[in-house]
Image 1 (cartoon, rainbow, N blue to C red):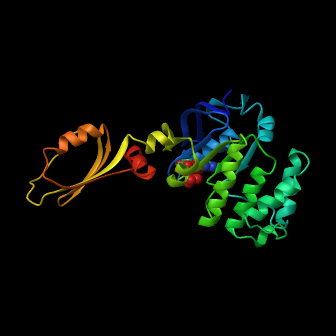
Image 2 (tube, rainbow, N blue to C red):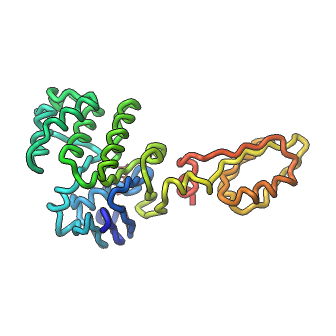
Image 3 (cartoon, protein in one colour):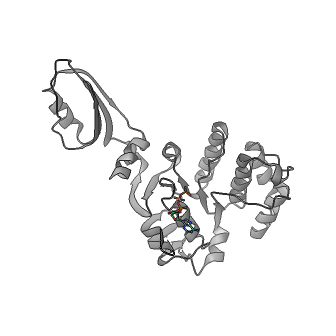
Length: 292
Ligand SMILES: Nc1ncnc2c1ncn2[C@@H]1O[C@H](COP(=O)(O)OP(=O)(O)OP(=O)(O)O)[C@@H](O)[C@H]1O
């Protein structure tokens, strides 16, 4: 059984495009990233999965349960962090967490305190006095507290400083090691690279690609910088697999997705001064998909 399965899931807001024909699935225990620029449809997908909004067509399942028919059962298995957290301002953070965790059964006070301590959150403070980042921490603890089988996190790191992001990813790794499935959306590719097994790339409401992170950052893609002799005339590389190239003077920068032997073969005929072959960041790889 898949942890999450979407089959041609579509959501329109009246005439406005939300998401169209989204199909992918997440294995149990996987850390799965959902990547796309603002407005791509990440939140729409997540909110449809949790039945906050109704699909226009298509279907989806969480641990085999139908997202529309079995909402309550699904909510019990899921910890959800919305992109924007809205709370009753007048409550203390700790009381709010107790109140919301109470829905799932007895509240694990120790877990709440440990998480709050690690995230440096004072549970006695009222929500209204908390900064955006501290409210985010409340949301993160809320999502984690009842030890859900599946974590769905919508842009979880926004508002957290780098140190806190580090702690947050540490906590996520521990959850993963305990078997929790994690689905999180982001427009920051490097953070997805850190922790995800696979990523789905969404753009303008449509799924562009589902790929393992190791495939994307692994052997296939290289950043190649070639510096030619000043005497070299305008030079054109005759190679398939060049995804993107730019030139300034005698320096050529390529994003290359092909056999490295073909590249070296081609370069034998070139008045080479310098050559660098480096691992591209996920950003650079994705830019190629977005530009298509
Ligand atoms: N309640 C709504 N009513 C009408 N259109 C909406 C609504 N919510 C989202 N949309 C539209 O659906 C599309 C996808 O938006 P969505 O919020 O899902 O994107 P996103 O990938 O989560 O981006 P962001 O990171 O900016 O939240 C956008 O064109 C957006 O304008």
